[in-house]
Image (tube, rainbow over all chains, first blue to last red; front, side, top):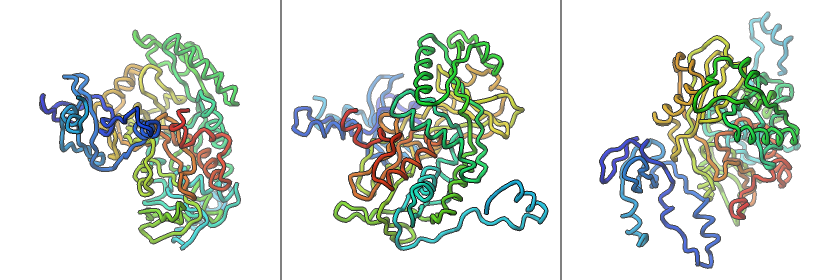
Length: 95
Length: 402
């Protein structure tokens, strides 16, 4: 797989490590009344779709940036690559 | 029809005209007591033990394609019970004991070969860990033996014993471990279940669950609605997709695991070996091919094929352990989809929906578990209580942080 890094261009996926579903950006509020249940869902439960999947990749052997990669889990086709920082800020996180 | 040497001779002398199909091609009935989704090893074993050991009637196995066409036909055939933890070892040892009696029980040749497994040791710390594991195995009624380098040299003289980074310092052997013909396991269980009256319905994909007031009433399929008092799901590699139809999210990610087989060679490997320093294991099939594999690719996938960087990684590890592997030509490589649970252990449990039961999350180790998984799932479906050896495989262990 080739990941088209927004800053560095096309890079082999072997340079990256994989974390998982991009919903991991949405870390729950640890002070909420429902925190225990929220963190159980956040840590353990996954949509695990067959098809389009937004996921977090870390450019460990490169510029060490986090990316949000939109990839099809049935075909491995990558259709979109974003900086995770931009995705997180757009969701009001990482301030 | 019972199989025997006498029967084989009789058929050989009469032109092999007396053989009958191994199981009926059943059509779905409108209602069953128990419906099992998934005509693989675990689903068929579940149906077999439900009928034979737990006296259940009116059972159907629904398979979206053909019997044995999923992960039971894509694994690398190893059976063993060399686990450490109390929640695991009794279950896998129960499974190995069922394997040992399986062919007589099913009256079917599954080519079970107890040629032994050897986990190689490369450091003093690893030896300590494997001694502890071996003791845990023995305490749970399994067999384990620590082998010296001299003993291993006699069995596997071609290994790279003096590798500068990963010298071989010993090994933990389980002599009762080995291999089984994976397809024949599915066929044998299918035949056994069929002979107990189970309907095995192929080309019948489940498209949804009918759930009313928190109770599962049956399944919608490509061959119409099938009512059932209880529905058991055993669909390794498709667990997330199937349970999403019941609006369940699972503690599971589906990944691709690759496997490889070389051209046929003369017998060189007496048993199964695993490399203790990298992800690599190898066996020789009865046809002579070196069957080997390693780690999962490491990203979500339903593609049943992996990427070349993992091929390189596994072949590097293989070359480090047994350099002669480099002279063998690769015949085939393939990928299978493994449902990776969040703690590496499986789930055999009820769901929050009454009448809906789940068996899955076997990671890359489901094949060896086939008999015990079927037995334990049948126990759960028949009695609504977990089998003693599978009591730790609950959904709620994550929520309760066990």
